[in-house]
Image (cartoon, rainbow, N blue to C red; front, side, top):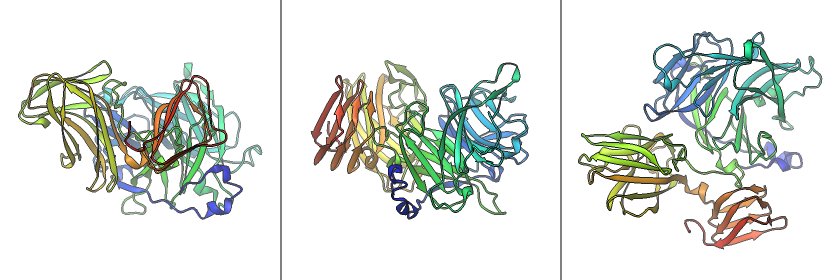
Length: 515
């Protein structure tokens, strides 16, 4: 159920009746991660896996751990940082693969800092060189902190609890946001954290502040959505300006309380959440999946499930697999993937370009779209499979020597897979080059809902928005935008809708899947 903050205080009685959403359980962690207080996903180019990195809170450990969503009990990597923790509370990464671990919980008051760890995929053997980014608050009264993420050379820190008795200017139930640079101060000094915003996470009628204090936060890869986790509530902020995270659309989601303390985006609309526990002695440590697309403003919603489908970030997210004596190279040529097959093998799948780490949910329908051509006309196959090779979907596609866009849909009839693969099989037929570009996987209900409503401004947006019934808009389209509204039945451009000079805008009655 969606709730708009604009009506929060006018219709608060409706908010109290909000249905609890059910998070989808991914699995149970090994007991080595029973205090999983943060989680982050990081691509490993050596294996082609998207690995989930986590850590314990303060249980006498100095290591961070990684595992796959398909097996949370098997630690694929353990990195000993050589720095025993006092109160590690969150983990995040930057665009260069560096990992940051926040030593800033309530037990860390004597030495609050963030550990900066070089990309764990680029070393083997001895622990990496770990740096400390020390900081202090600009005033007293900030008692606890458990959340952070990285954006544009800064770490953004979200306060969990305050003490107004120490500082009367502080408000119970408010999270205060600070930022510090992502490198240590010269000489090992302390930064004074810079104020970057504040937000009231409690709602009228909340019985206990404990359930609505911030325990984790993350920002989407496209920097347009922030998710802020509490034990019993998740706040979603979208279409904001720069780092003014609370300036755009604000919505929230309620769920049953348990000790949820970790959160990370796996693409621009899906998240993973972790909770603490200890097998055999109480609550069980688990990871959950949740799709936010119904809570993200449609003006900046990106329904894409793949990472780097246009290969603009070179090979990120993609690897090749060779079998049965086949051989090929994988390169990026003109922002397209080139698979140059030099030994074919005997089956299409003997040369495969693939991306792992997709979440495919039972009963949902997905649209697969890609551009392809080859040096000779030929067949390729497209297979959605699990981590062990079992097929969820198979498609045989004939391609030509001319770049052509292909699109089709399939429904996931197998059990939900949290670590699925998209595979392009290009072996068997020729020793030549095959080219792929603009690869996309989207859930149909996200990419083309029944109704789309636009209220927030669009700046420099280049996109076609589709709806199976209605599009309604009262927003402004600005800058160098190139926007198309495409609905099957009706487009309503209401009072307040405005297209600035220089914008390319088109509306048409066509609906889902049209051009």
